[in-house]
Length: 205
Image (cartoon, rainbow, N blue to C red; front, side, top):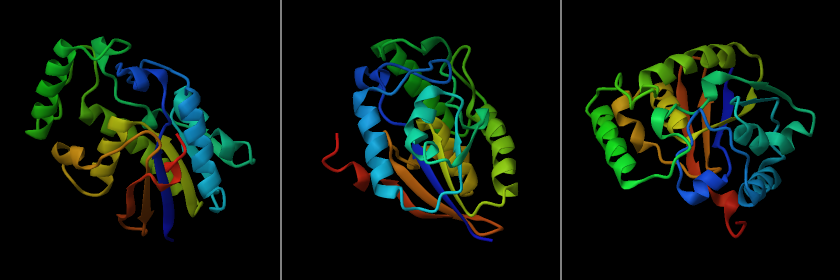
């Protein structure tokens, strides 16, 4: 069975707009722009035969797919889709000091050291282990068309793992608020159909 997977990042929050660090520990709502983005995505793709929706345990993910849920489509929240924890920097402005520390760990990850993290944060490997549990549920489900809403860094980790890349290369998977990746699972492997698609947001925000 071929499973169509429509993977999106959540819509904009005020933290995104202000350049502040979110992460798993910040449960922000969508702002007005984010709600418009969610509605624009729904208007573009409401025709898809979505049978199941998966979202993270965070409000910004749930609110992004709420227009589909309100159609009566079954949904499931799973912590495997939660954003990475950014530890001590969560909820704070993205200062020069925080940016330098962020770059240090990005360079570490790109060098293959994906078991290191900012203080009190998660490593990419820890996020991937959360995602393993979600992926088992996804692949065991009978639905052929599913919508998944997750978060930026979590999506990079998930896409790299699903598509057979080492996590050191996860940054090749770009994303923006409410960008879309369309993938298929063939029964044995994932393949990418469309990447980082934003056509639904043209002239919408």
